[in-house]
Length: 277
Image 1 (tube, rainbow, N blue to C red):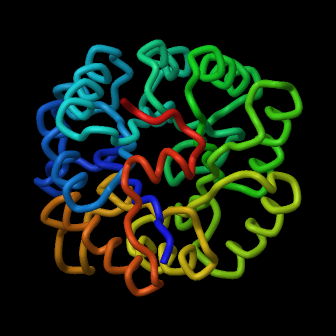
Image 2: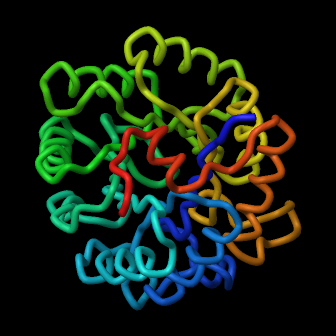
């Protein structure tokens, strides 16, 4: 058996209390929800923050509050900030990177989403990558399209990122990459060709969360992703009671593939991150 990192995306920028009352919105809710997932086996938390009206926010004070609470209650857990663009001004998407989280998400190209074009022009990508490099933050490259792998390769070639990025394939967003198993094989083959040293996982959106998780594990992924950012349900007719419930489902999937949840120390080693004291 070998470890697999369970990443939990606790909130995202879209789900609201009206969609599922368990979605954590305030910093205190996010800290409590993350602590529950930590105890259930998650070793990496992906953080978005929200305004009081539940809209997406770039407020550094909110990111700092969640960061400090998670560090206090979840020793060693890897903290990853989102620099995603839904509902956030492009100029503010990297405004919290000075807080030096362990990791931050980075999209290397634009893509169609159901209601918007998620814009990531080359100048913005370079700016975010440069800020991450300057603050010692490891990027997680969000792959919504095959070309985004080549965007990551360009950042390495230009010295904006090292040779060991963490790759996340995102499958199942309408108008973007469909959640089809053979497409994961195509993406993986290209990753191995141009980013052979990159670690990877895959995220399935909505009802595709568990199938994509199993596809990734069957191909030896370094980890899996779950959480209410991507999926608020257990079944078509049953809402998830918490992020921890989704993490427990991920833990079962790991066991079915002969894997176990990585500890924070093991996760840091896999991702080439500094160990905590």
